[in-house]
Amino acid sequence: MPVFVHLTSHDNLPAIRRAGIAPAKWSKRVYAMPVTRNFQVSHQWLRELRRSRSGTMVAVYFRVPDDEPVEIGHYSSPHRSVTAAEAAAIMMSVEAADPVAARQADNADKTAKAIRAGRRLPSSPQGYQVLLARRIQPSEILRVKVPPQVVGWRYQPGSNGMPPCTCICCAKGVWGVGKLLRAVEEAEAAGRPTKIIVGGRKDRSYDRVERLKARLAKS
Image 1 (tube, rainbow, N blue to C red):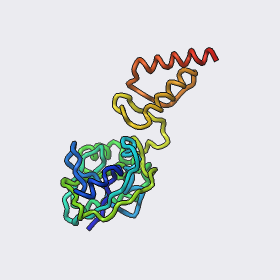
Image 2: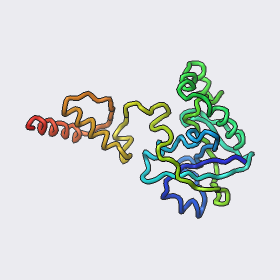
Image 3: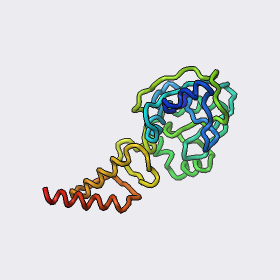
Image 4: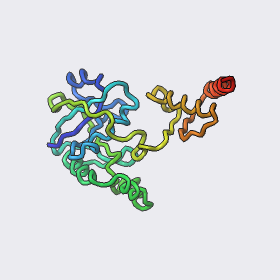
């Protein structure tokens, strides 16, 4: 019986301990990853999920039968219907791959076309997810732990170390977006180049730039 991990906010723990892991309202699925030898791969979604949540993220580990029907695939490509045991085997087969080299192979024309058509699964371990179409019962939960809060990638696989690129309209309320916007405004006012890309800016953002320019001119 394979073990899976579901990442969620610490605030959700009381409800999970009482009634289990409920499917997400927008998809009617429970999102999880098989627990394999590679901790980074199994918990890769932590930093991305933490972007839109406040507080500490926790890992909820649970066990389901080998023949439990699940779906597996990259979040941006078609998923394949398999059993829970098969999903764990798929992750164990790709977790040792170098993510950079695997992404380059997946982006090759023929391979990318086959992935988009659902004829094959990606070879890069980053971006995978497993979906379960039912509630995980409290009796199936094995343990809860607080993993390191810096595991995984943000925005998209391979984006670590790249300049942030976001849209104020889409990322409204996401932690850190205001800080990015202020950095762009300060750089523009001082005439410094910035690699940060922030779209959807309002007129008041440009007004702040002008006020900052006036303040710098006086100093």
